[in-house]
Image (cartoon, rainbow, N blue to C red):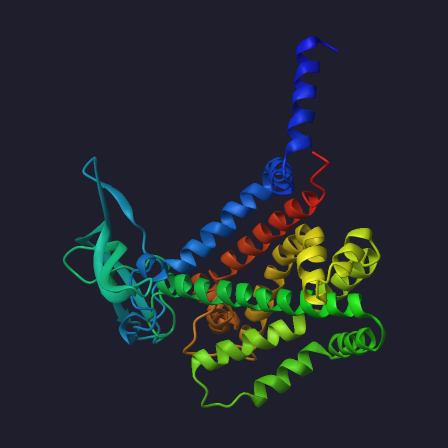
Length: 374
């Protein structure tokens, strides 16, 4: 082996020997290119969820029957050889034969599009009121002239609704997974550490929850939710239900890991110095497999998002006026919508993209769980 290669190998070995566990995991994770890309995509989705009002162009609930099922507009970047983003006005009229509303572009009326334009008022991050949006129009409100992804049957801007739906679906997944992790780690740790009757009760509870048929359960829960509940109440209830159902697998994994290490010397030493069971479980045991919990989180998030989207699509989850990917896809359930207004299916794109991104991210974190293999 050449001297330079040998020196480099020695240097890398020394660097690994003094690195922390977090550094080792990060070094291995960086080598997984798909996982890095997936992480960036997931971060972008959560930024969209955080700055949804700023990124949208119109109020997602604003409707107008005169622009029902308008196709997406094309943004033209150049005018007479110079950079001048704009859209053409769209005129709608009723077809006397089919009674369908048809639209035609009016090139004589050009509407300039610019960054940081004015629009509807909102509270930026809940701190202060503003009407500045990333994209706006000049001379006419964006709510009446700019429809980047077209409109739905009620004449609502699909682009703005998609932005707000991303916030709802992503936050339901995140909140549900956080609650599932808390339940899974806590009950799994208690089950594995104490054993005996406590372990038997918790394991039987897990078996009962896993044996309940999913579709009949959701149908029953959807029927049990009061019709006069607000969107916030339904949102909270759906999140809690997803969490209660979703913690069982992680709970069994944590139980097995705790049972495997509870006889180790460091656990015995912690008990001998007077550490309480809660401290032994959550301070001494859980950090040993924290990497697995992180990987399990990234793999559980897409399942939560798919669950919310599927249930809302079937009418068993969120319902209007709530805005989520599943609620938006409800309007595209029939063949007519797919044939005549295919832009109604646009919420499928973020669902597929975010699921793939989470899966790539989870694979990378799972591979990095053994930080010494770098």
